[in-house]
Amino acid sequence: MAMTVVISALVFGLLILFHELGHFLAARKAGVRVHEFAVGFGPPLLSLRRGETRYSLRIVPLGGFVRMAGMEPEEADDPRGFPQRPLGSRIAVIASGPLMNLLVAVALFTLVFGVVGVSLPRVDQTVLGEVLPGHPAKAAGLRPGDRVVAVDGIPVTDWRQLVSLVQERPGQETVLEVERQDHRLVIRLVPEESREFPGRGFIGVAPVTVLERLPLPQAIASGFLYAWQLTVVVLKALGGMLTGRQPVDLMGPVGAVVFIGQATRAGLENLMRLAGFLSLNIGLFNLLPIPALDGSRLVFLGLEGVRGRPVDPEKENLIHFVGFALLLLLIVVVTYRDILRLDAS
View 1 (cartoon, rainbow, N blue to C red):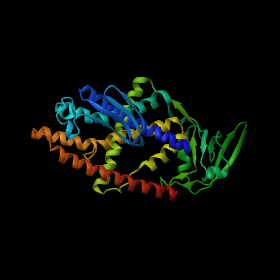
View 2 (view 1 turned 180 degrees about the vertical axis):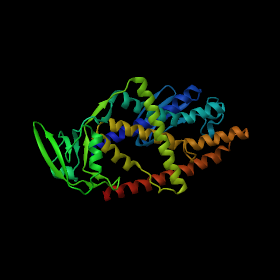
View 3 (view 1 turned 135 degrees about the horizontal axis):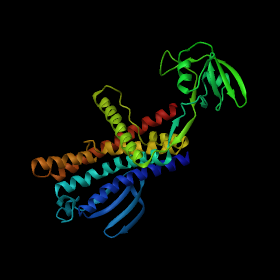
View 4 (view 1 turned 30 degrees about the vertical axis):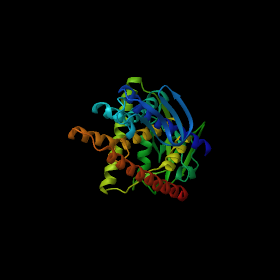
């Protein structure tokens, strides 16, 4: 559990670091004076000043901020303040945080496809890579490494044949001929009905997997494609929750820690995939037009472009303050639900 907490803190810390780094680099490019670059909230654990900027690591790793000149009333006239920059530069500064998270997601997926490798099933053979507990195969004595050579006397040479024949036999006694090292065994079992595909047989086995690494150009293309596919899934789920077509199901910090722990135990590929998915979610969530998030700040900048003058800073700050308080309340509620789920499991 301690290792899970440490890895979770590292994952969240790095994702937040890159998010704030996006804001910071864009602000520096736009000529904005940056007073502080912080990862986390609350009292600082570490703090270092370099030039005009203080860099700090704070005690609560659930966010971060880049404090720029001109954001306080007493600095409103600072020529290097954020409000004094051209509208396009300010839009770029705000948008760069979420966009950095999206790029980090693509980079992580690219590393998975091109460096770590993707686990792919060996469907050209019938060797068992995994035998799941609580299912007929395990109860009948099948083991990883067994090779199924026939089902009810019908020879099988690839995984698709094996699956097809098993699926045709839910609730029927089935005879498997199996090679185990230098011995041939006869295994009798009754496939159960699949929960995911009613009416089809299931015995609880999985094929051997191999790691496949793609060439760099193909890995990059696959990274972008995978990120796009996940984006579509997330946006459809969000749309379904907003329209009431599906129940609201949000995951908070506790739930994320649980998933990170599971992914860590499953291997580096799964951990990197999950980190990429979390980074993608952080980027997309921050683009939503919710007060206190980057998306709402982009909305106010868009209104400024349409109206030709900025929204009253005091009113905008009040809206962001209320939104931040509501976000904190949402985090508390979602965390409580995560804990209830954890207790129930």
